[in-house]
Structure formats: C-alpha cells, structure tokens
Image (cartoon, rainbow, N blue to C red; front, top):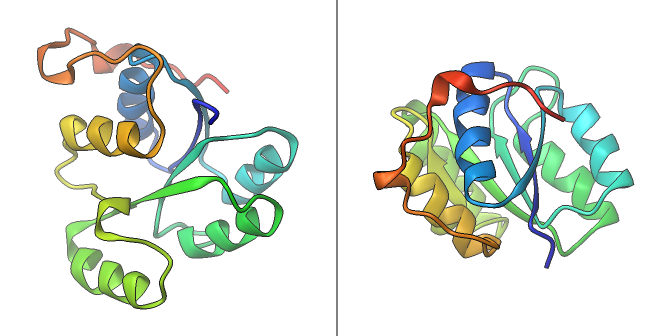
Length: 145
C-alpha cells in the first residue's frame, strides 16, 4: 500500500498542522484546498489515503470520495467533521455504508494524536513517531504539493 497521502482542506492553518505531523511520521503528503484539483491529482498519482474535510465550498467530501472511487477503489478515506455536524453526518455516512466510525476525525478541537492514530490504522507509516512527545512546530508548516 502506498504511504502517499492526499490532504484536502480549505483551511490552510489546519492543513499546515496536519501536513507537518504526517511528514514527520514519514508520509509523503500532497495538499490542495480545491476538491476538483484533488480529483485531478488522484487521477495522476496513487494515494494510499485521502484525508478530506466533509464540508467544502465547491464539492462535498462525499462527492470527492465518489469521484476518486470511480477511478480507484483501493484508496482509503478519512473524513474530518466539525462537531456541529459530527454525529448526524457520521451517522448518515455509516448508514450509506461509505465509512465506519474509525473513518471520522473530529476537526474542532483537532487532536493530532487522533489524526496520527487514524492515519496509521488506514495507511501504515514507514517511520512512526509519538506525536504526544514530538517537538514539531506547527507554525513552520508550508504549503508543499
């Protein structure tokens, strides 16, 4: 399985923190705030995992899931949800058979321990580290695609 991750989040500060931790854990991370660009990237490259916000302006995370799954049925997905929609959206997605409870990350407040644990479960890391003891500086994140 590929350890490449596609991160789709329109909030740059959140994406920067997640990207920094995942790179420190040995993953190759591509980020785009644009879900249509994510579809294009996924059609050109193989990703083991897509971490995406569920609510976005141009396309929902479910629409993104469907678009990418048309081309690649093996790519795993983790959906980030705000607490205000967490229980109802997650329940609806589970009823549709699109995901399991482990495929959902609570976005606010964002727990990097939760993110790293769920990403590792979906896409094993080549060089795991303990995020709770890490000195990774979230402020130093840059947008690298």
